[in-house]
Length: 376
Image (cartoon, rainbow, N blue to C red; front, top):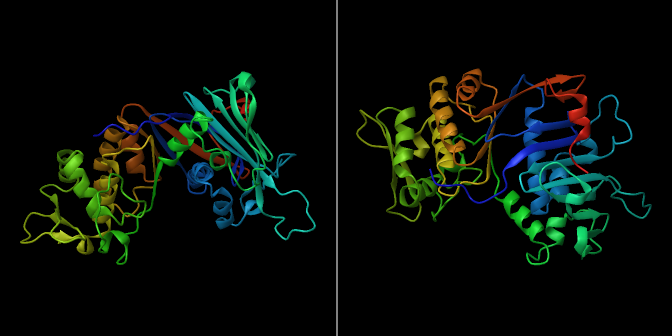
């Protein structure tokens, strides 16, 4: 396995006011397994982390709009309290941490966009647990400023839908912002690769060097060839042999659009991606993602077991465990076989979520842990 890209390892994810996540602080390990019954809020955690990534990209408000707007995603359960109209997201890292708070726009009789969410506040601080003296950069309303001894404005008149990551772009003036944005943008999310007849991975695409498999898997052949050339090609072949005994991968590079081929015992010719079963194609997509020559600082897999035969789950767990030795991996799973296999690996932190009165809970976490938030 290649070493992961430089980036900030996470220690906690904090969410308040988002869907079933009334107020939750989750510890994150090198390999974190999130499980629980259907409807307990596993997917909401995946979406919440995706919203943090959207803030770094600069399209958080648009991403919330695609979910139905702020009103559709706010916690709507009992004990809503004074913070019921606010959404707060953030994470703690070893050296840098970040949090953001969103709410509804202030009353403006001249605007028809009163339900648009706006970014109220943002914070970047040093270390994990927040302390006022550790604050490096903060945004309040339209102003982003540096804190501490060098207190000074970094950006003025920031629009309500614009995060500090897009408002402040000078790496010399604000290296913390630049470094954290770069790290967040390098996180990689894989959620239910398509394997139907028209799935991107089954279609022909012009191939270029691909150190990281795309989220839709459309560049699968190019990603595999890149692994063969600059990554751990032998390891990938061994992983394929572990899942499919006697099989190995090849890539036909004779045309600008590469063709992925799976050689199987007893067949006179290899099978192209268009001919593979859904489960086989999905496993190849996961293997290509996990054997990336450019591993991200955080790799998130949402229910990777979907459409896989139970016999493929132990090899998948071994593959995930190997990658977790190189970078931080977060897996959201519901298949008992995969959960059991991952729990048997060294260093796996398991978070078994439950739901009570509509709220997602982590059993054993005290009310003080949830309320403290460890954020501003």
